[in-house]
Image (cartoon, rainbow, N blue to C red; front, top):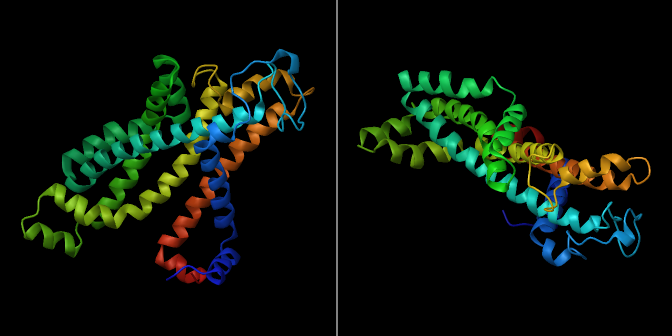
Length: 285
């Protein structure tokens, strides 16, 4: 159906959280992509003469203990969080599709080995603790941060893919393709994957929120991207000593993390409602 203002307003009345999530994500993505042009100052420029300034016309979000502009660091931090979240979800999803698809499609001893000795082992450990352990072992840096978060997050995608594949692998259209001589890879990518992509998209949207929060946590602990790269978690760590005299140093990055996480969670809920025919009938979409 073509887009119209009346249709959008109708959807906004029935799904207000989806609209709020879309606006928050649009702000987050635009801030990250356009950070080099939107940031009024360099995020690493030190100006000790203007350290710990309150929000003003020159510095709308104030300055930190080294005189760096907080707004510029927030914008570049959004760019960093966007890059980390997209990369981690892509790597985790690729591993989940490969391992979960193999276990769900073939079953038998392959399923037992992958599910019991791989997925369940990683799922038994708290993801954030696993990420902290790998980040501490690998060291700081973008690549090591992505690997640490992907190692702790792929098992959830693999379990979801396995369950979805097992639900559709014995459907009539899959049996027909198999009877016509189609190979396993063709059946998976042409007949199974298109029918399970809805659940994967919802999980990926929610997973992006988890990655942003995990990246901020690791950066807060000093295990993320090393300084002077701007990170919301590192900004929160720097603000710990100034919570009472300059609380805006913690409020702005905390609000950025909260809004981005809320946006992805709202988006995941909206995708679930939009892609599930039963839910769409219930809410009248």
